[in-house]
Image (tube, rainbow, N blue to C red):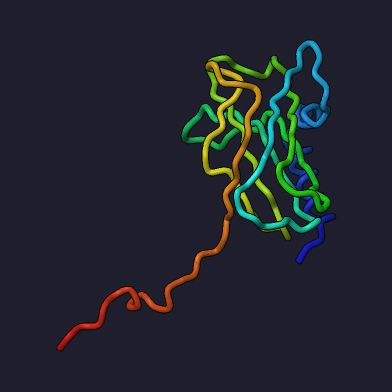
Length: 159
């Protein structure tokens, strides 16, 4: 298993690849050409997160249906033993926003380099009358038990 340092290094590398807008997105101040999307991230399960869990919240342009979302900004929050709800604020440059596009916020929690929680509902923001503040509910990404055999689903034949 990899340490939180390697997870953080991967996350920071991802941040660097997204570009300078991401660096601005981690600055919690808004002035002039900048605005922000904020809210809280939580989940329903009564499970405590380990101290090395990472919350990653992204503002994405999800306008193109057959293409990957474009990350406009993100915030990476080491949980450090804290528990939900987690407040977030992503600052973005207003000049990067196209009023005809759709923007959403996605959040996920990574534990031991594995996805543990993610939102399954869409949280539209900014354009088309959507707010700049959203509360995001995450769902557990647990492993479901596999059937012992394909045939275990069938009742035995009566001969």
